[in-house]
Amino acid sequence: MRLRDCHNFHDFRRLARRRLPGPIFDYIDGAADDEVTHRQNTASFERCDLVPNVLRGVENVDLSVTVLGQKLAIPIYCSPTALQRLFHHAGERAVAAAAAKYGTMFGVSSLGTVSLEELRKAHDTPQVYQFYYHRDRGLNRAMMQRAKEAGVQVMMLTVDSITGGNRERDKRTGFSIPFRLTLAGMYQFGIKPAWGINYLTHERFKLPQLDQHVDMGSGALSISKYFTEMLDPSMNWDDVAEMVRLWNGHFCLKGVMSVADARRAVEIGCTGIVLSNHGGRQLDGSRAPFDQLAEIVDAVGGRIDVIMDGGIQRGTHVLKALSLGAKAVGVGRYYLYPLAAAGQAGVERALDLMRSELERGMKLMGCTAINQLSRENLRFR
Image (tube, rainbow, N blue to C red; front, side, top):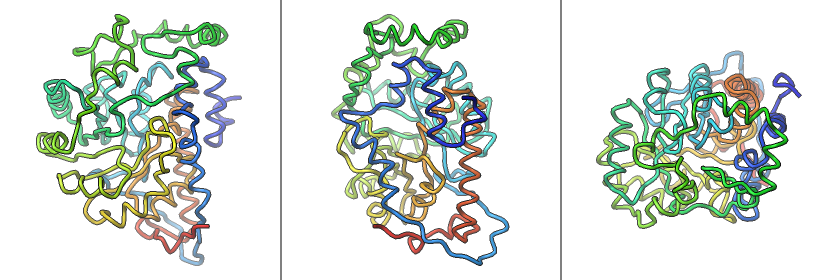
């Protein structure tokens, strides 16, 4: 199977599975507990039908949106995800270049593997910094200041990860940073030697957003310990309100799922929220963001930009979310599988396929601009 044979999400996933050692594929692919929420994230779209209009004159379609003050050529963006250079040696460099080519936003994680500064200098496309809240308040302020000086446009605080989710696939293989592989995990690396050669012949793996503060390479701290020992479970709304004031720009909370929390985000001055259950990787059994979207939009949609992520595999999924009132949609695994399969070329192919699906879907819906999508175009079973 080659990249040109990939025509959808599932094709990219199969190619990534062929190329990655099992523990790393499972890190991307897996979720918490029984992975029920992970499955429901996509299944939720299947309970909603599109109702198209015809004879609307759809020769030219405008897919652009403005979200968090950023003009995007397409209504999806590459959500910030951790450890990208484990999946392909180009990591965030590939994702940023692909996002720039397609005129959309990309995110960099606190656990990113390329520095904020390098990516800002390389691309002028909008950049999100996905931030975790640490017990060390000085570290929080220092990381925010660094992002501001780098020219990052949007601060995105993850609020659903004050402790790590129960990811049992990782426990079975011993996946961690640094690696603590079980025998089964070592075997999986052994039968995919190309990945290891690639990993060893490129620059040393590091976490540049944290390297001044955390020694990940010594074995003293694993990713799971990072979540349980360094992140602050006492974080509350007053702490976040202070961060919003300090940042003094576009500030978004990622992981909001209740109306009460959405309203509170408006009150403290956030300019955006992302409805998200972390791809099903945190609290299994939690509601799918798409199922919760209308309720949140009705409560706060006129006062704050409402975004969602989770389960997006098709252009029609995006159209359904936009029809319910989302300003834009984030994708994670949708670009991570093609990144793992083929680097920048893979991410570009995935974004190109999505753009084509969106343009085709808009024409078939009888819409020439995103703001023409509405709930009149939807029916729930």
